[in-house]
Amino acid sequence: MTVDVNDIKLQYVIKSFDQLSIYELYGLLRIRQEVFVVEQNCPYQDLDDKDQKAHHIIAYHDDKIVAYTRLLAPGASYPDYSSIGRVVNDQEYRGKGIGKVIMKVSIEKTKELYPHHPIKISAQTYILDFYSSLGFVAIGEEYLEDDIPHRGMILEF
Image 1 (cartoon, rainbow, N blue to C red):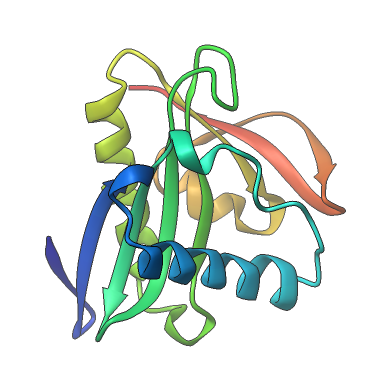
Image 2: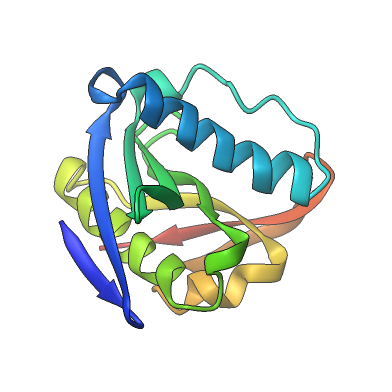
């Protein structure tokens, strides 16, 4: 699927783990490490054995991965909830609307895959407004996840 976002032509692919090429897997792990480990200075165990059960949404611009999410079935992260996680946007491409588009694609695909299960996410507190603009509602208290403030959020449909 191709989408134009602010004059940037993006190619989105949606694949299960088994469908990923080794180059796609390397690329998505690289962008996750660049943002979550290096940029956010947060050493954490990214490889959590959930990737193998996930659907992966990758946004490319000129063969470069610029955004990514992973979709998880109910029970993989939260009982009775599907989930969208590892939401990442390349630093060079932020502020251009790409994050919102990949989240909309992710929400629609999650609804298609798991139509009877609302979506729950663990959102970094500083971007709660971003997720709220997509219909997510904050629940519970703020908590630390890998030393970064987070809050649970749910999207009912």
